[in-house]
Amino acid sequence: MRVAVAFVLALSTLLAGCFGEGEQTISEEEPETPIWLDYEMVDTVPAISPWEFTTIDLNLNESTTTTWAVFNKDYGGNCCEHYLATTIEGDILNIGGEYPVWSEDRGHEWDTYIPEALPALGQCITAVPTNPGQEGLGEGSIVQATNGDIISMSWFPYIGGDGKIDKFYAILYDDSEQEWKWCYNRMTEPFYDRSWQVEVVGPISSAYGNGDWASLVVSNFWHQSGNLGGQISVDGLNYFNFQFAGRNSNQGLEDVNLNFSDLPAYYDVNKPHKEMRAFPLPSGGLYFPQYFSDGTSAFLDTTLNWNKHDVQFPSEYCQLDSTGALHCVSLSGTTFTHHLSYDGGSSWATQNYSDENWAQIEEWEFQANGALDLFVLNVRYQSAEGPDVDVLYHVRDYSESMEPDTLTYIGLGDLDSTSGAGNDIRFDFASLAILNDGGVVVAYHDSSDPDPLFAVEIEMPVY
Image (cartoon, rainbow, N blue to C red; front, side, top):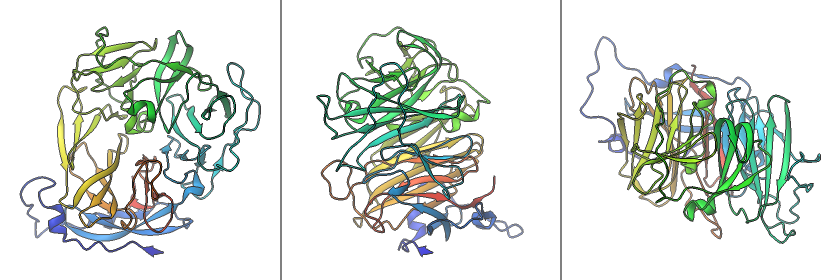
């Protein structure tokens, strides 16, 4: 095993003023013990590449090392990123590179779906992806829908032909038929850049067709250019250009119920990447907090029409988990705030995250799992000393206390990288997922590998 670098930090300074107020008095009769005394190795099969990462009990200001399994870009990534997700069955999904890659056993064995057969009928075109000389540069997105299907896509740049250089391949796992399908979609406009993808809960009845759900894909390029539009599909294969509502447009007001409870387990895994800035609604449709210029939210209904919901959210980055809890995370300077609501957004409890060593926030991501009562926050920050550092906060039993239990340093924390094409050392975005046994899957980057890595938690509390 390789041991992570020892961070020369005074824990009392590291934690001062960040979580709660005052000091706790420890009873002499019942002294508190470090949280990791209850940890177990949840996977008895040796990992392909086990690492030890420094973990801090934030309540006691004590540290130890915990075991994680580490994977490089050969397990679904590319030069610059991983796009991680999980399923309710406990699979790890990754489409950081060209094709969906998955493991059903916490990373011991891996499978890849590479399109070979003819695509489905419709607008699909018989054109198996090829990218001679540019292998490894494809990138996509993936998520499990609320009926068990897995919707994903891959963007292939630099291929040429057909009068364009971008190629959009829809890739679907049909749960009812237990098989993968694919479709090359010739778009009227170049797709251009990594996608963010999300399910629109159905049943859908729209001008684009009908289906159990719709899949909405937004290019990172178009998103950064002001949400100029995306692509939508009601079968996960045939996609059509889809116009977004203008930020200043006058949409009809819609009364949207956001108060839910006891939802299917899918709502703990179908969270899109935070940059999608939306979350699926169990009653049908898709919700965009803080979408309009006046701070109100947008609601994409099951007819795939846009509406306005006159409610102010604390952030545009939100998730609804299987208990019905709404989680939002906001960032102001170098201070994160976790907002939690159990009444559909009428009231919010908050918890702040900050550190004097955070010179600048580079990337971040969060996720909650209602069934496990678990919230995690991943932060990649530029340290005051210079290198970028990857950390992961665990909040166990968030329904009882929003204060984090542990802080884990993921990797060596010794590499300065920058997102974006043209940079020599790239880590383009954070990515995070939670397995059904509570294990976290998280991307990071350090000097041990020229490309970003991801780690799977092995040593942890048993749920």
